[in-house]
Length: 249
Image (cartoon, rainbow, N blue to C red; front, top):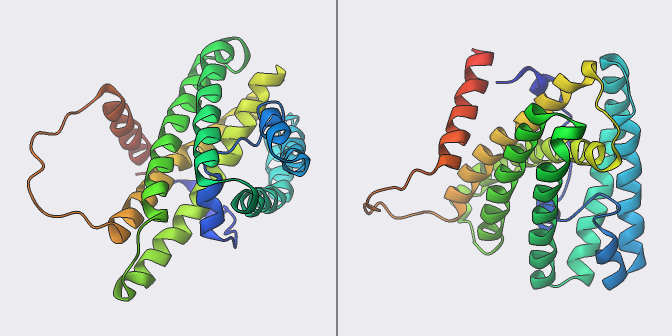
């Protein structure tokens, strides 16, 4: 288990709200079209999240980054949950899906176009892998939203959901920091880089927990699925997971 888990906050949030906002943009420029098309107050909520992230990436030392993150992260969680609450009321499921997919595509374009000249190729690759993992999480979240869980498995499902929430919010917070750095051209200071990278590594844990949660809520039969196609991305995910385990062994 990664060392950062020992100090990661345990936010108290509505899991349904989090599933609703897994893919929604939390960076001001990328969310402009959402606000224009639906409601100004959505834009105002995103602006608050954007400001919190901007405060964090301005830190120049590891000590100040950790201190400011400790103060800002609970506020960030509250804002993200507010975004989820409003989205559930004013946006249809189809609209959330469309906005989320557009947001993923825009973030991927940011990494392709901006990473090398702003945060460097190594951190850019880590960010792109994190985003790819969040896409997989989003697909599983849609499965979970439409599934029922039996009462005999409800406690186990709740435990997996809580752990997923913990890691998913931590991951998204650090991914937003990286995206904001690229879009504004504000360099991540060397002392801060490793802490940011550790935050992105939480994506692997978030995926593992939501995968187990989905298996509880959407059980699969035991029939032989036949040959499994192993893609380059799957191999990258496996290699990254093994590397994290070796670092913490």
